[in-house]
Amino acid sequence: MAEQSRTRPRPSTAARKRGRTTGNDPGAVARQGAELLQSLISQRVEGVSAVRRTDDGWCVEVDVLELARIPDTTSLLATYEVKLDEDGELLEYYRTHRYRRGAADQ
Image (cartoon, rainbow, N blue to C red; front, side):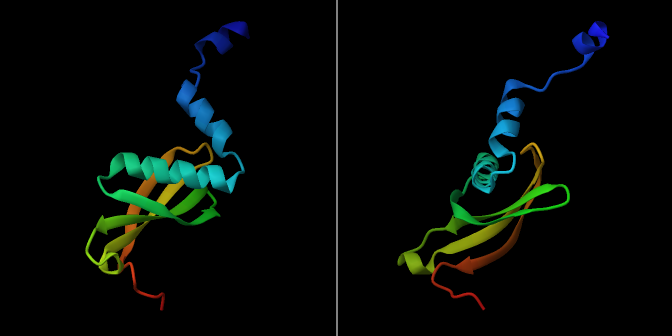
């Protein structure tokens, strides 16, 4: 029995920290999703507009500045869906839509 525990792979320190950080805390999940997306794309993350539980873990909607313009209200932003598993590990991300900063929801 003791031999099994020695041969079983252990999660990395970063994975253990992320697992503890996310848990059932939507705020921590939102931060994790935004940070993971920021590390993968060159555009600046503006904020998180939604976070929700899914069957597989979490879905975080992150708003990103894609093209800065003057005046700022004409800048182009995009919303990305970032899907995380229960431990806060990235499953996938993709852009759902683009919009002008000054545009109202329809």
